Amino acid sequence: MKTITAFFLVLISLQSRGQDSLLLSRLKTLQGKIVTFSSVEKKDSLFLICFWSSGSEQSITELNAINVNLENWQKMKPFRFLAVSVDEGKAAGLLRPLYNMNGWTFEAYVDLYGDLRRALHSNNLPQSLVVYKNEVIYEQSGWSAGSENYLIQKIFSIKN
Image (cartoon, rainbow, N blue to C red; front, side, top):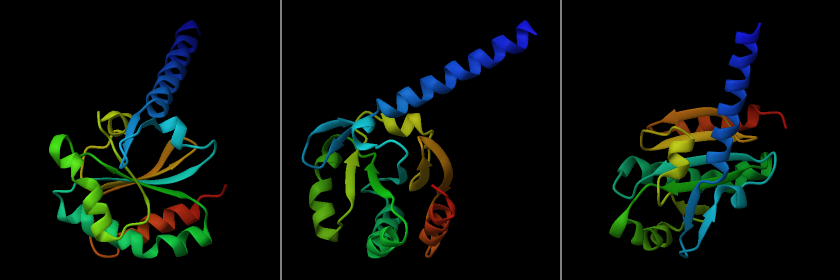
């Protein structure tokens, strides 16, 4: 019995540590301000988070497809969309012109230190995650035409 109790205590501590690393993840806005995910996140929020890179054509195409539909989707079901770049160094400095050139209107950040990507165990690009109450509900790696519809179907299926 003591072994089972100890096991559950370890699981609970690991889960809380994982949430701490998610909430303390540092992001950089396109205006250069460093923020934590906890300052972006609102309690019980529903998020679609897309990790992308300026060097990935699939990433850019996915973001363009989402941008076209985002306003209508958010009218049907409130959620926040965050585009999180994994670019580093000089490439990270070129994101703002890329954002403006594409006419994107969504929230965009740079995962400057890889904190958020590690906290969400994201390894591939592009990678999209539906996050609800700080838990990953669904994840999708890669992109092909129409795959953004699978993401929105997952968001619509969440009852909040």
